[in-house]
Image (cartoon, rainbow, N blue to C red; front, side, top):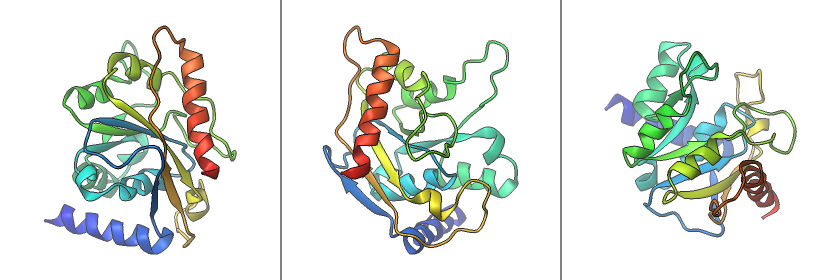
Length: 203
């Protein structure tokens, strides 16, 4: 009950602060297993793209959250687990641990996920080069639909280092799915996936 109330509060807050516009170009919102991958410039990206999905998709879609940041306080940890059902990842690799393992488990369970392939937030207008995770997941789960998304303006709502948001109109544009082609090399695929995200900026 408390998690549901927080979910409604966050949705209302995001809509008041940003307008939370969702634009679907190239594919409709659909209840199929997907990996949504987007540019990353703010901690609010996670909330923004989650709020842009229809309710029936939010319930089957799990955002990826950096464990070191989102477990720093009990409130952050509770929100990411009880409200977002997020998948935690460790940004600092230790030993033989595979950082993709929590994502693999979520996909094996049939969940969709929201991924930020840059790995960390960037300061530039365009995304940083994508890391290998998206390629490895595409290789391992060829039937999961890969949907690019561009989150516009959210970095101005809560820039890196700020804690108090300011109201600015924002949007999330979802594009046509991309697919790993047979024999396609890792860097070529990652560059093509990144280009698909950037192309949505002016859509």
